[in-house]
Length: 114
Length: 111
Image (cartoon, rainbow over all chains, first blue to last red; front, side):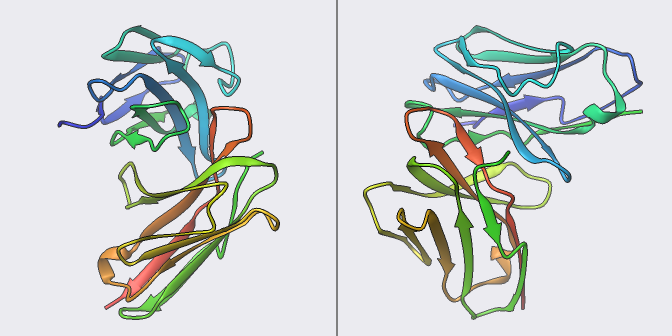
């Protein structure tokens, strides 16, 4: 089992550029989560999907953020345009059962916006 | 605001000692989970305790839950240098599916 896969692992971009983060959940898992982790705000839930359908996006900070899950094996988190305050580590996690079961995290994408 | 608050924020101990971390939360929960995060890595699930359980063990880990006080504790016995990490509690609100993480405790175990 390869675990949750995220790409890229590191991303450095300039303010105003579009950023796309990618996630492949564990095969057979039917819920997927996107989190953001910063020193100031800790670990924040941005959005989660169940069976590819967005269930709760109340944590998405602004319209600049969007997430999609076109199929059970792939999800993207897009920031357009990016700003320096978006710099953080973004984690994707998946779970086999209902969303309240244990979650399996990917290694994260460290985003730096200059 | 975050559901869980951990205490202490940081803890330093010697190998072989026990480490205790506490978590407090604000509203009714379905379950409470503990996760570990090594520096630069994703979180790893350690243990889940349901709202109708009071204590749970897994290897050197012991978790307690007191729903009347809205608090939980994680005890790591006979700590090892490899236990050095940040530990987070996470709760599921009653009647929702969202998992909300606490602020974390940074544990340093010196050999």
